[in-house]
Amino acid sequence: MIIELLIILISVTGLWVGAIWVVESASTIAKKLGLSELVIGLTVVAIATSAPEFAVTVSAALRGQTSISVGNVVGSNIFNLGFILGLVAIFSGIATNKILIKRDGSLLLFTSLLLLIFFYDLNLSVVEGIILTAILIIYVSVLIIKKEKIEEGVPAGIFKWYDIPKLIFGVAAIIISANFLVDSATILARNIGVSEWIIGITIVAGGTSVPELATSMVAVYKGRYGISAGNLIGSDLFNMLGVLGVAAILNPLNITENEYISMYLMMGSIVVLLFLMRGGWRISKRDGIVLILISIFRWSFDFIF
Image (cartoon, rainbow, N blue to C red):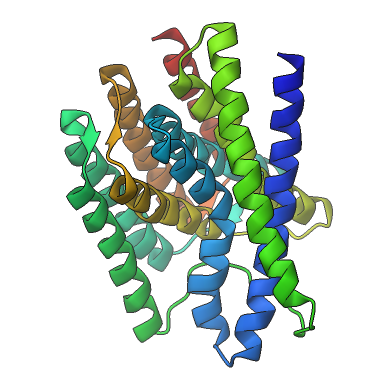
């Protein structure tokens, strides 16, 4: 078990470093090719920051470990919109706005409802995966046409010759780390007698959410409290639509009845989040505590049932 935990720790580090390399190099390469910051933010950066979740979810799906695939996305949702957003809000309230709630928040709620419908038979089929992916493509296309942004920070930087090999090594680090993480998480689950779903929504999801957590904590440490809920909502949209969509296209995803109930809780927590965001157009420190408590409850439910 100690060896598996060590491999998981190293894998999480690999995901973190790989994600940073991919975001930085891909952004500078895109700028060199003449793409606007809007397009870069909505495509290159958004996809790159979801690379850890994508690599782990697809890797698990191809191996038939679909509980880890879906659990990873649900768990990342818990981290992003619960712990990370709540933790940042406790340090300093986070401003929200009508566009964020009506456009991104509404789509997030609609997507969670759609997943409940699609998973009603405890299976996410190839056709349903195509539908999810198509919705994401339409969403990004509309934002680009209307020249609207989601909160995806684009790192400033000038293209250098080593950005291309940096991108290649970054992608390789993510893929290799994802495979080791899934393997070790599966072995750990069997050794301690818990389901792959539990490992997926905790250790695996926490590992793939490390880049977002690290970025948020560094921003707080440096006194940059302007971090918005938009980047975390945008990340969840890419995870739920793109990551699950592509994974289902490659290999249909199956879950159990208890895991399906957990998805109801996911939708309920999204409703609460949107309600908190609407109140005073700000997520207060008290709201942050509420978000963290809701996340703890969701995890407790999965462990108990």
